[in-house]
Length: 181
Image (cartoon, rainbow, N blue to C red):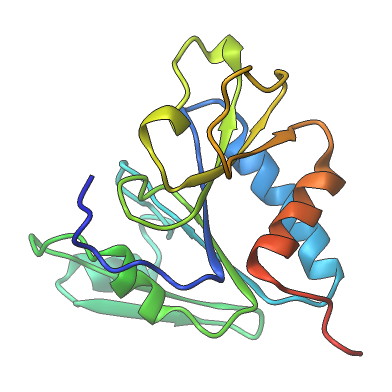
């Protein structure tokens, strides 16, 4: 873990865990509940796979494949920017955050090695050890197991099946309240 990286702002929380632990499912629930409170939530999801965001023969894909550095596709409903790295290094989490618009909260899935506060989703049935013992930036664990006897100070243990309690913890952690109507 690179401890020389800057610590990210308080309104950025990572959701980490091993593959299949339920990170995306938890994110989906949290975003739905936060959006229902009229909060603006951004998501950064890291992938180790190549991304295919456009149908292969659409104009935007053809132009990107022809050599465009960036292609912005816009519609009355949304827009997307596809930026080709073409051998350049992958942007850091800080650089990705700088590209995002303002938000009450940004949730990050991935970028585990970065020094920002994280909530780990942990399930014993995945057959992999938890991450929290080796990462002091994991400040909470959402699990379907009871808390272990020796839990480090300051580490919150949350019931993965009690989504309202996880939402309450998150809102308190980043000190966000529902905006005024």
